[in-house]
Length: 179
Image (cartoon, rainbow, N blue to C red):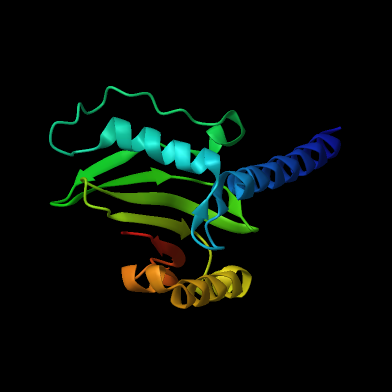
């Protein structure tokens, strides 16, 4: 009987460990994040989330901070951590832990730099995935985005950009759509 119990505990432990590892990846965020890698175009829900964060956390002069509610779509609620905001001279930086997957790549966080009535607009999606893997999966989309920005006279003049950069032990997709 003792051996049977030990085997059951060993098997149960493996099942719980495997379940925990799968749960650590979090939900698929593709629909929520949208085409960030393709043209720096967030989905409607991500754009609304950004707007809610800005309404709640902006340091812009005259803005009533911390009065707005941030709506989190139920589908991604377990992926979202506690937001934090930093005041910078010309923008507010809002950082949100975001643990899930985007195009199969594990994400770590999303950060928004939102200008104080000046057009600053940067979205940074950080991955807990090595840069080579990120480049292999979304690199072609990011390259096409840069080609499209360069081909459009207005976007080229504004200096819009999308790039993959090292970020800690992972990488980040940085979309700068400042105007």
